[in-house]
Image (cartoon, rainbow, N blue to C red; front, side, top):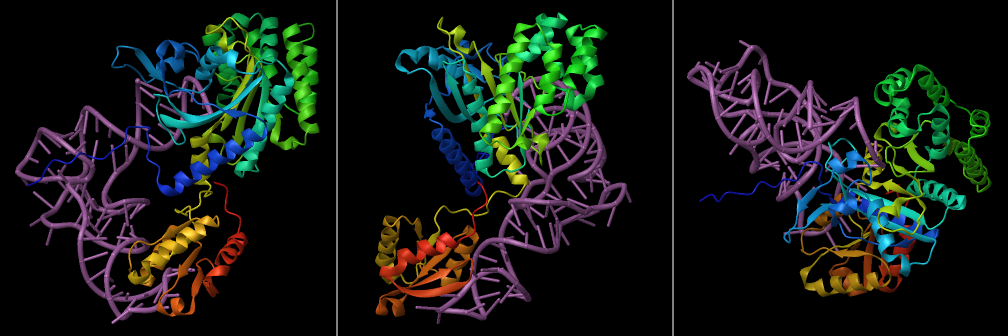
Length: 449
RNA sequence: GUGGCUGUAGCUCAGUUGGUUAGAGCGCCAGAUUGUGGAUCUGGAGGUCGCGGGUUCAAGCCCCGUCAGCCACCCCA
């Protein structure tokens, strides 16, 4: 009698998370939370599902096509959010009277995009957004940069570069060149400079933006500016002289780089890249992208920018803002290829060996005692052989094992075994918690994640 | 969404011009070792060869479809 079994499977781009990677994921979330909170950002949450009209047309045509959209049981046209920024715009418009402005929020949550999958690109992934709304101040733009820097380095990366630009500078150039009405196509072409090279960009500029050879040359000449932020800005200043938009952009960038340096951000982690533009239509000012120098192909792991009109479709009140988003799952894919994910599959450092079923109550009790002392402890459920249990402990990545049988109970002591070093000490129960704390502190710093 | 590559045990892979009962290493389980993990040895379990259809006397191998993964576009975290 064979009953038909359901094939266990997951949808394209949707994944299960086993303990070791899931622990790495949670560690990243904790780091993000800690860094965001250190700057005064408060947590919020919003529903996964929104009315489709809330989401449609906010991120450009591509985002619209990628929406997971359906009709709910009540006949409503609904869709899963494809990012956290648009729901935040809706949220801000809806609750602005209850929020003190400027309002700083963080939001760690999954989003869904029905696009083709790759390494580091999934249809369900977690974004870690933080935004400051209700202020035009460049100080908010600068703090956004600092948060990105602190976050990526807190995760454990040394070799990364935050690339910054300002849409105002780009717009200034396009105004001068008479291309401002085609800015979306021009910027999209420009954004690919690093990928397809100058000739590729020139071709796309002519084809998709209808740019003349002269216009195209000017754009490319501009995009190829390299050097220290200060020297690039000085050059730009000459080119954009008299254009108010461009000059404002330059001033804000100059201030950003000056203050970032003043605040102690290492110069090599920061670059002015006038070719980055970002595809999302809603950005109007500063733009950020962050690349890992050892894995640039995975794409930007933390991106964002300033948007001065995000909530305009939901309220007549002006809500300018600036923020960025850490791509947690993309980052995790990179960390996995770097071997930065710990193999440990247990959040508890201590395993109590179930030596003798007669003493089970003692094992259960010592577990509770240690937990009360702040030590996460697992008690093995079966009275299997000690070798078996130690092998289990070894596989799961426990740091310490606690062993006691007839002999120990008769003497009122426990064997504390350090599985990493292979050493074992005999201790009275009163000394256990302290000894365990000491042993755990000696542990080499866990790799990030 | 478009094009290309790939899919054999839990993992990494081998499998001859299509030929009969599909293999290896690692891992897993059991034992050697009934109070001590990572080593060694012995034994064992585990596969409708991603799934469905077709060609053929015969398909893991050839053809079509489908699902999934990777790469390039597109876009982006």
